[in-house]
Length: 375
Image: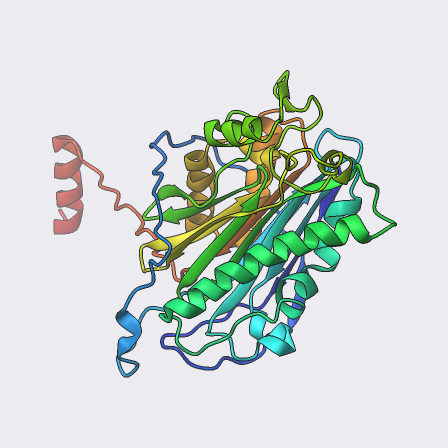
């Protein structure tokens, strides 16, 4: 099996909203073993409103919670012959992209791309992601993250980035029209977490130990997606869209999207589904992974594995590797990619060593006493 080393940036931290120093780029490979025993706690699914930002920012003189961001990733080819997954981890977006210097701190960007029909589409989107998501779109910036106009502009910008990436794949002659990719992107701006998804990669937030799903899988089993596809004239054959694709949303795949003149819109779309929330002290980390993970692990099981790992060694990269190794142990049949983004500091409570008590028999006690008395 071939594993991909993670690329991470030095953690950034702030107790109040203030400018941060630029990090240094580093490369490391994580190693860890998988601990056993999975939690079976239920998954919490919440319906997030379009404007969930806290009003706590109205008084800038009062320190407010700002997450400390550290991330790690791990990828493995799994049982397949070719690796078609790609991913991105940028822990300090404003310092890495010059045009984003005014973004609220902290600012970070993460993405997972699960390619199909070859790796061309996934590789293209990864290599051009910063341009497509932030430079071409003239990404909005503001110093007030509770600004509802700013939040809507961010949503619109993420949506347009997905659509433009899809068109770019159609226009690039070097990309096969049968190549496509799912896309899952997460943006952190101050306390705002916004997740955009097209396909069956998944983002899960750990809130007080429980799994909060920040995306929906766009598969035929999703009833809302099934109705949308059928309304657009699409059909499902053996669980595949038009008998070809296991997802109902993706970038690329233009051999399926190009329809004859006068026909209805293609049932395969690149329109992302976007969710957002405001991060609080209760939020511990975010897990982003391709379907190779979710085919064999529930959202809560993945959260439990990562939480145990962070408590044990506090290394997001090792946690990502542990997720991948557990999926391999459970005989997943796909490529594997996992990204873990921690929102808490590295301070851990070290359990106290248990005290040991020993008892003496009456005869032993009398012997000990006689020795102490010198008799």
